[in-house]
Length: 299
Image (cartoon, rainbow, N blue to C red; front, side, top):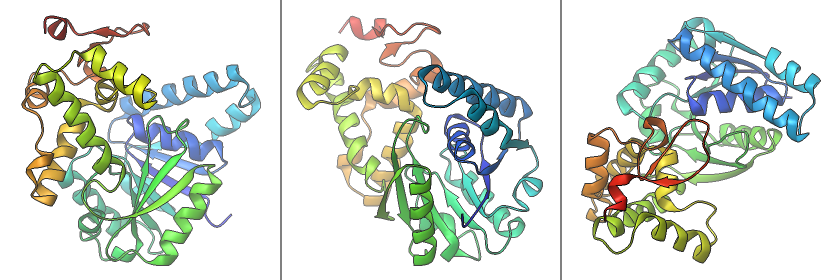
């Protein structure tokens, strides 16, 4: 195996999922977050997800324990990356924060280390510009939930070296993922196609064309989507959807990417979807029942 030591920055949903997958495939993973509470929460989530895999028979109890032993945690960035061969940044989708992190990584990480970002929309070329090694910076966009979803969208920045791309493609296959290499333009492919669809679904609701259930049912039954666009938006996080649409609008200067006013209002009101307990649907801990938010039942 050409690399063994992986550092993951950010212990949120994506970060703990990425750590899970690497640990399961026998990589040594250091999960880094400024919050010890968040790290503890991430380890608990990873353990529960492994328990679920054990119950389904996809991993054994022994494999679970070995995988968990592959993960260590750190709250100090310098300690967490000092021996890394690959670093994957999975912090929140905030450009200024990512630029700050990559500037620090450039100073702290081994010179031969590959610096990857799990960004879903922010320019990899711009992130790389915060470093003195842009050829070693690449996008490695995992899908949520990481242990389940097979795709890794690999984004090559303007200066990303081919050898780096080849290594990340090979690495993704070792993780039993399917890599797709795309170029660095706003939204890449996944969100350039997905977000306008979600935005149009929100516009359809906003304009009274159909209700929440009707819109999602049409797309599930008519287009064979496993989840309707409004439910998917809740799952992604409406704040994340809004952020990505603004990146697309600014990046292309095209009004077709302008976020629906309803989406803007929902984010302003703190109705962010699953993470806040309410979006287009209501979410109750422990319940799998899909209940449309009372606000949209009135429409």
